[in-house]
Length: 176
Image (cartoon, rainbow, N blue to C red; front, side):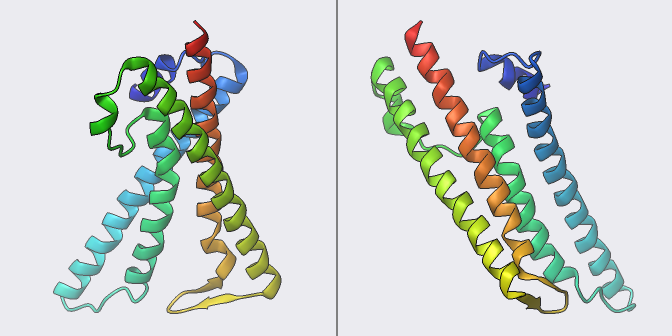
């Protein structure tokens, strides 16, 4: 429900096909992150129970938990930004006049969009480079190294899109 309310607050209709698809994508990001965090909790719990009853442990659980935590955090970021539930320090910003605060928010959206676009590009470039080299991660789990860069590239690309969307909506609101 909060997701629909966030979509409505932006003034963008989720009834339009692109708006609805974007809404579903954000909803999928949140659901994926929730499932990953839930799976991680189950994995850690199972490992603790197995160790405490003397049945050994799940050898790959610590490593998998590290990867799940990273992936879930990156996948949740665009969803949280979409909802407006991201971490934000606005002590000084609240003291500014409304017009200045709005313009500062537009500038922040542009800067954040650029940063996220650069990070997405860099993560994709590193993934392509490690894939071309055939690099592997050798720990308990062995897999192609470029897999680790995909969540960051995906998340940063979505964050750049969301910051651009927020800028566009803010610009339109300034014209009213």
